[in-house]
Image (cartoon, rainbow, N blue to C red; front, side, top):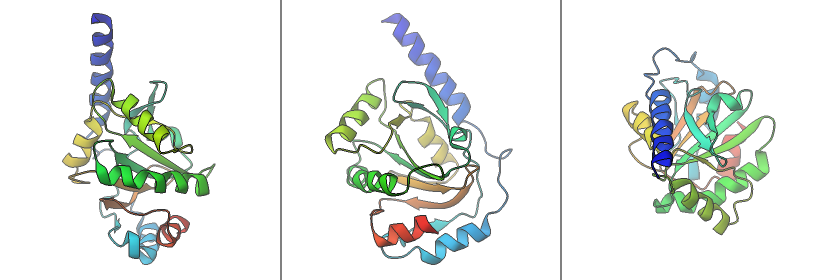
Length: 197
């Protein structure tokens, strides 16, 4: 018991340090053309997708993978990313997951990846997320999690979002292009237009 607790505290502390960044030192150059290209096609299901005005860098955003290994978005360098923050207790998040699984199936590869990060808290959070993904047959989404919930605190502190789900479209350097607060049916013509752009 005590050993596991100490390990959990150490993991939580590592998360806190990596996700407590101010973001000021790691701002990205303005990606106005990319943001405008996405904004031009964001309609219908994705009408709420907003082009970035902050150009935040999320390369240092820390979480764990299915094996419990520390990961950051820098690990996906070279790929454009759709980063979704969700939790099993969030009904709109649950509804959105099959769409995100379909988008990963359709577009995932060397150039693009859906990174869905579960914010289910506590030591059993990743387990709950894994069970849910298995239950809905989401075979294309890798399990990523932040059971410390520090990612959400960072998103809230940087005024990215106030609730879940939230989605970031990032370029190959993990620089913000667009932000979506709330759910969307990504597996739609509207979603494909945005990803293609």
